[in-house]
Each structure stands twice: as structure tokens, then as C-alpha cells.
Image (cartoon, rainbow, N blue to C red; front, side, top):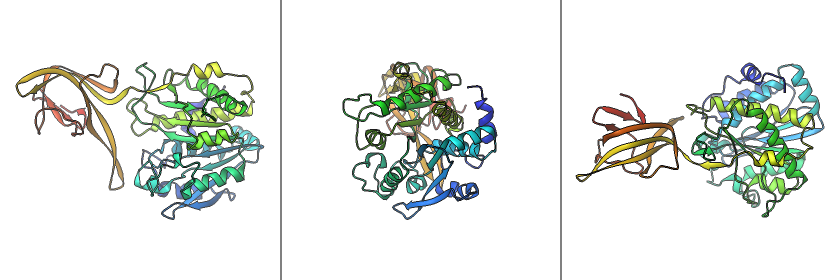
Length: 386
């Protein structure tokens, strides 16, 4: 692929979208601005009666259904999706090629209530990604109706994953992970799943040039209640995208670039029909996602337990907390003791310095990560500040 994906991203990045808190208010005016030829339609309402939008563009034979923010607090792929839509509007040869080959049906925010509340679930506290059989929620029914009416050739299920995931035991974060969901309990490979597998193998080849060793493969345990498994079961090649952590990028502004690159690459691969030769082995060679990270690890810390001093380690993890329409990353102590199998996105060696804090002078689970080492080095919200 000869195009410069970095440059393409820089030229088409949607500047009005930034950070983690992306709500319906963030995208509504943008959608109206992009509605140059009646591409925009309200296809349903959320539990709290908010509009769910579909943005459909292109006149090509190959039909792609993409949906983002099924989980309200997973917004990185929404940013990447708008960056991609900007490409379709830029008048370039690439735009022309894509619009002639494909019809894109995008649901940029399936769960507007969860987006506003910054929760995974919808306003009824239901995880929409476990509701593909019951269809108990209006948002689930909207997605299913769109799937049935549009009759896609490929489905792109766009998500975020937490900072706890690494690429196997490599010590590298899983910046982007993919999955071709199973369609049955036996996790067999049929033609439709193989198309998804081959597509992921192709995307992986491209992304390895930019983030070598930072691409993971999600666990493929079968759960028919998950939307990807259901659509794969119904015979449509489905790809799960998981936007993860890039070092020091808690706003996921760097990660959105790799989501954008993955989208552009996937459509080039499909259009060039580069998914006909089995790349199953290439797919399996992508290491599995593994829970191996904490946001912070503090090693070799001296703790005084009632006069008995021990040297140990502890970890803290950010909780994303919505306070007055802003997402704050607040660090809490998450594990104390043995951490040999874990990595920290930031690691500190205390060199046997004594721990103290403004409570009991011992770290406790779920306590804010505000403490001192040797009474002089101060940590606030997990970070060393002096």
C-alpha cells in the first residue's frame, strides 16, 4: 500500500472531536454539516428518547455496516470513524474510488444515553453487546433492523478496551486488537468467518509498520448474545475493532490514528479482493490480548505494618470518573504484593523507601493513590510530582 497513511490522517482528522468524552452533542452538528446530500437519517430513539443516527454514503456494490459507541464510554472509534468520513468528502482519487466501490452505512453512536452518562451500558443499565438475542432494548432493535434492511457484506463492530490489556507477555500495550468472532461453540472456520480472519491478517500487516508488536487478538469464546457472534452466525463476515492504550495517550488521540489507518486499509484490502487466499496462520500468529497491565506499578516499597517492616510492591489503576461533564482519571490502589506477572504503563522503583500517607501509613485497596516515599517524594493521583 503506497499511500502515506500518516499524512492522510493528519489531513482528515476531525479537529472538533477530542478526548474521551464524546456525546451526542459532540457529533450532532458535525453530522448535520456532513449531510450534504441527504446521507443522514434518524433510525430510532434511545431509552431516553435521544435520536440514533445513520449516516449512509457511497454507491458501490460492497456494503459495509459500521457502528460505534455501542458502549457509551468507548469513544475512540467514533473519532476514527469521523476522521474516515472526512476522507470520503475530500474530493480525492481515494474518496472517488471508495465511494464507487462501497456503500457505507455508519451508526456513529448507537448508545447516546450511555455516551452522555459515560457508562458502558445504556440508560436501563443493559449491556447492548449482550442483548443481541433478547433484543430487549430499543438501541439493540435499531441495530438489528439496520442490519436486516441494509444486508451488509461486512460488519465492523467498533469498541474500546481498557488499559489493562497487553500483547501476550511482551510488555507492550495492546494499542489495537481485533477479532473475527466465532459463529458457533466449536469456533469453527466457515467461509464468512475466514473472510473476517483474512481481512484482520491484512490490517495487521499494515499496522505492524506503525506500531510493531502492539496489536493483539481478542479471545474468541463464543457467546451468541454478543452482537458480533450473532452477525457472524447469520453469515456476514464481522470484524471486532478494539481501540486500546498507546503509551501516555489516555485521551486516545494517538490510538484514533491507528483505528483510522485500520479502516482505510481494510477497505483497500476488500476492494483489491485481497481476502481470497487463506491467511488463517497469519491471523493466529497475532498474539492474544492478556490482562497484564496496571496504569502504575511501584516496586521495592518499604511498608511498616505495626512495627514490622516489609519490602513489597503495589499497583494503582485509573478509574474514569465523569464529574460535571468532564472525564477525570483518578488513580486508586488496585493491588498490593506480588506483581511479577504484571507491567506498569508507568513504573517506579522505590529502592526500599518508606511509604507514608495521610491515613494509616499503609496502602489499602481502593484508596486514592496519594502518598509519600521517604516523607519527601510526593505522589498525587498516582504520579510523582516532587
